[in-house]
Structures are given as C-alpha cells and as structure tokens.
Image (cartoon, rainbow, N blue to C red; front, top):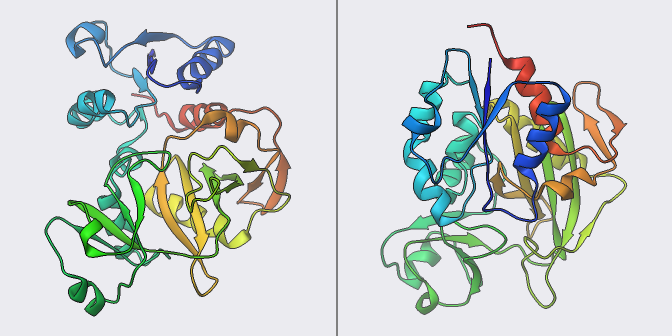
Length: 291
C-alpha cells in the first residue's frame, strides 16, 4: 500500500501536509508527495495500484477549489473511498448553501437563515420572520471574509445567505470533532466587530459547553464526518446554535488544546502538542480494509 500525499503549499502558516509527512515517516509508511493543483492525474498517479490511498488538505482558495472540486468524485472513486477527506466530509466544505439544507433537514439548532439568488423586498423578508440587522454571507469564504452585518434591503448583494443576527456574543465557541474526540476553544470577536472567525484572539477555556460538544459529536456521527470544526454562538434566547462547519481549520490552534473529551467514556483526557493530523491518520489507518 502506498499513500499519495497532496502538498497543499497554498496554505501557511498551517503545516497540514508537513505533519502528515512527519507521521508517515515516523510510522515507516510508504508514501508519495504529489501536487494535484499543478499536475495532471495521469502523471501524478502513473504508478497507482489497487489498495493505494490519497490524503490531502484540499482548501478554499479559488485556485485550489477550481481544480479539486470538479475532480473530487473521480478521485474518491479511483481510490475506492480510501481517501481523506471522504465524500460526506468534503461535500459541505466551503458550501454554505449546502450546509443550510443539512441543518434544516436534520433539525440541527441554527439561526434562521435563507439562501437568496434573486431580489427580495423588505416586506417579503418581514413576512418570513426576518428583521434587521441581518448577517449577510456569500456561500463561500473563510476567516469571516464575505460576511457583513446589514440594516436594509439596499445592502443585499446577490446571491447570498441572510442569517438571523445573534446579539450579545463577545465571541464564539469553536468545537473540533475528530473520531470520538471533542476539543476546542473560545474565539473572541475582532475589536468593534461582531465576527470572531479569523480574529486570532483565542482562549483555551477549562470546560467547553457540554451541549455544544454533544451537538457537534452527534452531527459528526450522523453524517460520517471524520474531522469537522463547528462554530457555536448563543441566540437571542440564550440557546446554543450552530453557525457553520468546516473540515479544514488552523491546525496549530487545535494542536494547542490541552485536553479532549472522549465521547465514548465522557471523560476528559490530556492532549499536549498533538496535532489534529495525528488523530486523523490514526483513525484513517484503522478504517482501511484489505483490498
């Protein structure tokens, strides 16, 4: 067996592929570095054999998505699903309109939101139960890019997502679920802003809100997500609600979490300087079945 490892050189200061490579070397695993962004599949996989695998951190930058998204299904089929991320995990990545349907169809707690392709009046929004201010988002983007707070119909830029604004939050709770492990931290808002994503202002709190941990773990299990990040805030009634999900995230913020909850035992376990990639590869290898 050989593992093809995609070099995601587009993303810094993350060390996703470097950490994957470190693990493969440590475990004496046969692997091959490949660049799927700049090379054709025929060239990259010329030595492919049944039983080989593919691991990659396929990201959100335009150049990355433009190449990987169109060929992901063929890659998953070629490797017979011996791939990270698997289809369910990657399907919702940087696709906020798809996430709306996921949350709605499964009754996951989330602020009221709607995807709009065409013009809508303030009165129509009011009839549907929306009131300003509203959060406006594009269907793509990370680190709070393409997200703004609007006060009128004139500010809407189509297509977009309009989302109920949850006031009185000084930040959000980022929950990461990898297998049966749940870890995370609090992110504070940017100065004079309502957005926490991308602020870089992080606190590793002693106890994560257990309700958030349970919701995130439930969603990961129900949808077979190997690794997923969840962003929670409290709504106007003080209830925890889920804003977005993402299978990619800044790896060193998760590395620096001091503990994780083992959701099988419900116990807190120490975690010092362990990268998310370590957990991901541990689970990935244990999931492989003989060809």
